Image: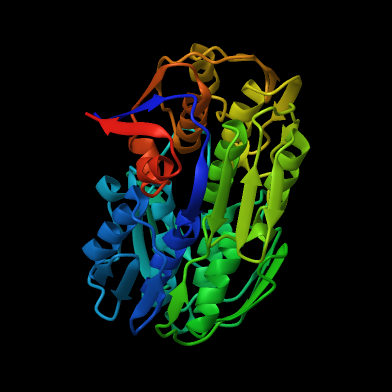
Length: 421
């Protein structure tokens, strides 16, 4: 199994181009199932989760052509309406084929999802939303079996649906399904994440009638059919945020291109509060730091508040900052699994429920650590960049799910990092 080996103590300097967002690409790839003509996408990152999604669509009969960061998907001849456990077990986002399959073909059989272990992310909100739109759904032998064959014209019916909990994938699944439903659907307490907005913008290009994306009420007036379009995936704000923290922690000077500062307001604010110099233009972010940082409290919450996907990275920053910080996680109940690994590097962290108390230390020492999930992996990389000596991070397949060419990008900035078997 592959691992990363990092020699700490080098300031990151230079510039990078931020990749397209994984969490925007995954639902948009699934949205290809809605279209009767090809969907052309660009800025599609080379990531494990992207590969898995494309493979899943291929098993259904979607013709996929991939060249560098461009992907064309033709779902004009879909033969299978099933997502098997073997395909779904490695990635929870596979549930995103449920809404499109049901909306366009009237039937779907999708395995209950697997994926990473950061906490419970039940799919009941997806199912209840589709049931509100008239779908007949049964769960048997670990599969969601859904049908609209009993409905008028065999089409989902528009409905008003309030989501008890803000759910990004739930919002995306139901928005895609509603695009081909009969009548008007109103999603209340909808997720406001930029990736939801990017999906909506792509669907609109495909002929969908959607308003309100980016607010907590999204209205979709169903249309009879959708067509292909061309769409550029929005930049990955979490990848950008991770490199911003890396620059600040190492006392670096890094310019990020192809980034939207307006999607990173909460992260930028915290880095400035910690003492980093952050300057922005419309599509660049420049981070400079002397490495002498102050501890900052963070509390995760749905967008536009501080993102849960940046919690582990800011905890790594607090580990080497001056002072004491409270890190409160409100989204996922198991998202402190990186704590014990950071402690192996010398971090002083104590946990009480969903809050971690982080006392800054003067020096981290390299050690062998193990990645437990995607963002936990990123926090260990950040800690390794400033630790004294050598840090070895095992089980880095998590990193390959969400960071494109990580070691190449870090090396370009002057880090001493390499991959080994």
